[in-house]
Image 1 (spheres, rainbow, N blue to C red):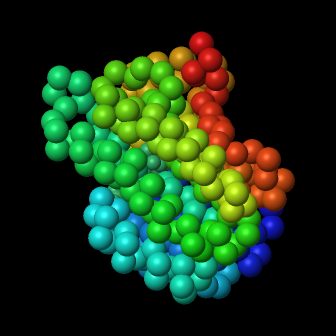
Image 2 (image 1 turned 180 degrees about the vertical axis):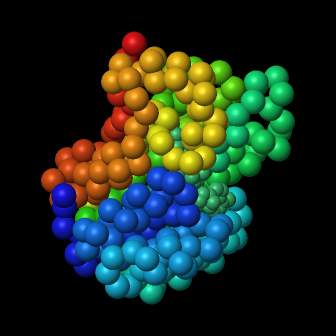
Length: 244
Ligand SMILES: NC(=O)c1ccc[n+]([C@@H]2O[C@H](COP(=O)([O-])OP(=O)(O)OC[C@H]3O[C@@H](n4cnc5c(N)ncnc54)[C@H](O)[C@@H]3O)[C@@H](O)[C@H]2O)c1
């Protein structure tokens, strides 16, 4: 769709379902991808099309690990594009959610994107046309039962997106979010299977969940040269679920 030859992409949550689609799509479009996850992505990096893809193991809930890892990636490869995709989606009724669950959800879904973006900023500035995409969720926009911590963290991420977009536009950097409906990844389909999943699909006007490739296509568009005027936006990729 877009040529990213010569661009370096820092992708968090690269071991996950959407991360796989994003890594493959950017690699096929010529980018070098730095795959960041707490899981080891070495094998995944080797399977990508092209040269120069690397795996970086990092626990994004740990600020010290972020401070240690991101500059290493920046110095080794540069950073033109940052995709804050790692996320934690544990669901439970609000009265049963624990402080620990709340804190870890916010540490990974909200604090980490800020810290990673801050650590990547010098390299994004050097890029001259830096791009940041934050993976939010439809759960940030409408009430979904059992998503108290998750929805709050993703709503915070959209707010963070807007502030960074305003502050960093002067450096040629755009910052946008994507808010998908359920995306057909192995993890998501565990929670949205059976009648619960079928009902959820009926509630989406297009009658189906999103495909990982549709989310990576949205990210690639936001990271492309054609999208330079789009800044601070939340691209809702939900088949129309939240407009009802
Ligand atoms: N799949 C969906 O239905 C859906 C819908 C809306 C939004 N999202 C968001 O999209 C993103 C990707 O979702 P996915 O379905 O691919 O999820 P996934 O669970 O398959 O992948 C998430 C990845 O994040 C990594 N991760 C989690 N905690 C980490 C930590 N502390 N340090 C480093 N890495 C960590 C995991 O190891 C995993 O590889 C998430 O932010 C998620 O909230 C997903």
